[in-house]
Amino acid sequence: MKLKAIKEAEATHYMPVFSRDSLCIERGEGNCVYDIYGNKYVDFVAGIATNILGYNHPEFTDAVCAQVKTLIHVSNHYYTEIQSRYIKKLCDASGFSRVFLCNSGAEANECALKLVRRFYKNRGEQKTILTAEGSFHGRTLATLTATDNAAQHDVYSPLPSGFKSFKYNDFDDFKSKLTDDVGAVFLETIQGERGVRPFSDDFLVNAYAMCKSKGILFVADEIQTGMGRTGKLFSFEHFGIKPDVITLAKAIAGGIPMGACLAVEEVGTAFKLGDHGSTFGGNALACAAADKVLDLLLGGLLDSAAEVGEYLGERLSHFSKYNFIADIRGRGLMRGIQFTDKVPAALFEGKLKERGYLVNVAGNNTVRLVPPLTITREEIDGLVAALDDVCASTNV
Image 1 (cartoon, rainbow, N blue to C red):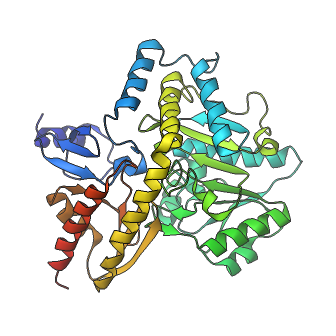
Image 2: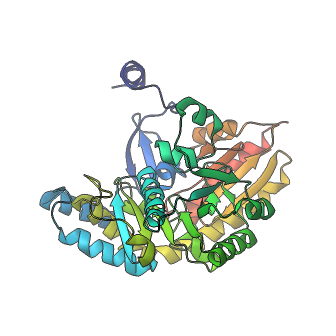
Image 3: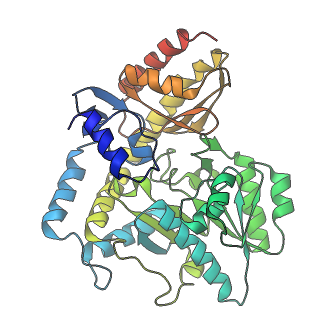
């Protein structure tokens, strides 16, 4: 099928929820993808921070293909050795003792929200969950409620009760909202969908300390920041804190759909038999993929990605010389370039695509860069040169 026919089929049959780029990707190799016409693009989107091993990574591909030939799915009515091996490895690496495996980030966050409520119900209490303005936690009704999106709230109201929010990175407002009815704080250390907005180190350390002093659960959404994206296995490690619950998805299985909710023992044992479940969650194929991803991260990829992430930050720093760039921020291989209202970020997305580089636009008029963790310095240099060329030719 040619692109016109592909687009017509989608327009006719797919529910109208996506605004897609006019690009049909056919295959990937290394850190690049190729469209149906054979055009090559270096991928700084990576399935939105998902394909951390790039494409057709030999060890990952071999592990997934071997598992497909053996066992894909039998449901959680039965044990599988691969799931058992993987959850032990994940808990050992993370320092958490309990895990629930699911299929997506929204499901992982839904599990975390249910777990918090169950934890307090076991104590005979009903508590409010405090989230940050600018957050994105998913598209189920509960995770949408936890997400700061007034327009979507209006569309899908009535929404579940029991949530309130505080101003992003505003510790005074946070303290004022941390009232006796609050049982958990739920946040992303870096707000990816809002334009790669990191909370300050001081905010996170102080917010965590205040939660600990009040006996309030601290939940970190690591769906976009986890699995090596920021230079650590999990972003919370940068701050010397240990949440009670974290959620993972996107990169956890290298592109195979998977999510996870991890918790400390006291919280992770709050569920009772039958309280939660998932047909596909943690099936043999997903666990084999996730097991290989974790092996590769711990076997050296995490360290090399941290070094390359620092290099990306250094190479981007000089773009502050352009008066239409408002901010450059992020950590590791999760970076955002925010443009002023003089120019739309989408212009730069399109110009870079013409030069063979894929990036995407997030909130606050920001170009987001979340490439595979296997991205090379040479590929970063190429992106920087292309972006410099675009910036130099932009008249405002």
